[in-house]
Length: 175
Image (tube, rainbow, N blue to C red; front, side):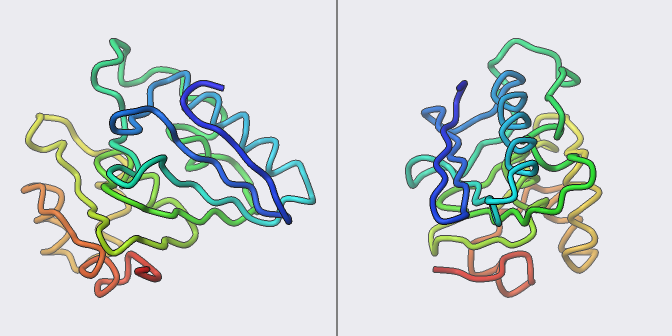
């Protein structure tokens, strides 16, 4: 597989994004992740899926800006990140955020059914500083945060610590 690996034990599938240095995702990674999520959804033995990132520094830096591909590439059945746009998904997805969830990585975490974050995790959308619209983030974040805080995260790139994210209800639990 390209940039991730999967384990399944006791009805729990764990998909680990594993692309050093920052677990950034490009089209082939996302496409493969989508295929994995389609398989999880079709397997009645899989009761839940945990999405995490390898290492402790990054959950995911989101879209790989150095991948030399168009932003609107084919990301597969579930869209960018493999599950966020998967139609009729019923298997719960838990984001285990063990570092920075940046840009599309934050958007993937927001699309999960539950988020558990390490105490050193951070969440932010740096796209405004790059002149890019965080499309999924600009749709999801205003529903999760008070509107003025959502605007600060979206327009100014404010970073949320794990404690901030838990306090504002984005994260279910900090561990």
